[in-house]
Length: 301
Image (cartoon, rainbow, N blue to C red; front, side):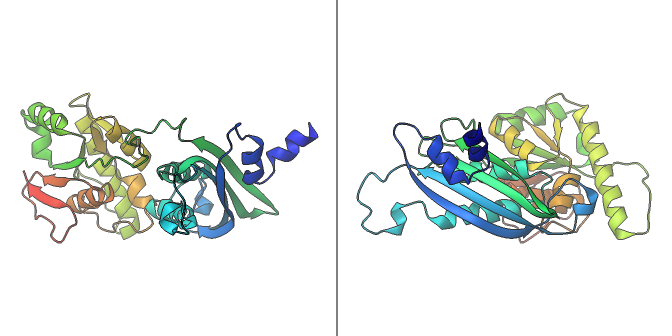
């Protein structure tokens, strides 16, 4: 029992060794990597970065040919720190568990990576460390969009912004049929044609407007059962990989984004989403000005 307890709290590298198969793999590791992160489910944690420590061990497939001292033939340590930085930059998260899952998934997208141990600990909560550790392997990962060569398959949805007239149009079902047949689609909507509170205060008005857009998203969902309202990047990615139609509820992603949009304009928000998910294009319904200078093709419906 003592050895089991000791192993439970040992460094991920020791856990990797203890759980190795009869055909052990090479390992690379990142130890005690500390960064400041805005993370946490409680309101008092928002806007107050705290130190978080990462310990990561990656079991890698042995190189099929001599390395010849060539860095391009190995899984670079930089890919681990880059995976962490990319997930921290993507959006603000509530849970260490979510962050660990995303870091492990990103690492396992590397062709050489076979199994990843990810331990994350908060250092500033009290006179102790609070953390989580997960183990994920390529064989166990139920990740769609990852090819046999380990490379992530490129999935580029079409983002369609609907104004209220388009939402009420009798031809909506036919449009949905066409968009769904062409590939993954994310629908965005604007503000409803209803009065909403005027707070006279920009930060709170922003939240009021985002919630009003979400009310309109639920109104669209009532028009067709294929329109499923989703709020998080994880939900959207999951749906896109399975060809499910999404209606975007923007509050969570916009407010959690590390460098998110400050505009409350629904078309600007739709464009930000399109850029975030690397959309093929943004199609805009309604008599509105089309944004210019985007990385995504913008078309008028």
